[in-house]
Image (cartoon, rainbow, N blue to C red):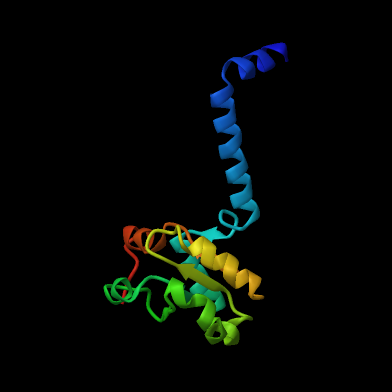
Length: 137
């Protein structure tokens, strides 16, 4: 144990950086960024088994260049003002997707705060969907 405290004292910057990154990871998991992220194949299973709803939060140009079939397009900037459009889907699973899976986590938190219980983020976004050779419209 004395070696650990000696190491920490000698490498204060390294230990501080490790502690900071660990804290960020824990916060991310607690806020749902990691625990409710699903792979594209899991999203397909939700679509087929539970009639899930896909919400694409990319901008108009990205959406028009290719999107998941039957996806509801609500740009990230408009999500808060257009959240009522999704109220009719509260009893169904919702999968939020973006270009790379980074901004969908914040949209997931916003939907959860609005009372949506069964919300997921597409891990890797549309890029992962394409990488898995899944169809786009």
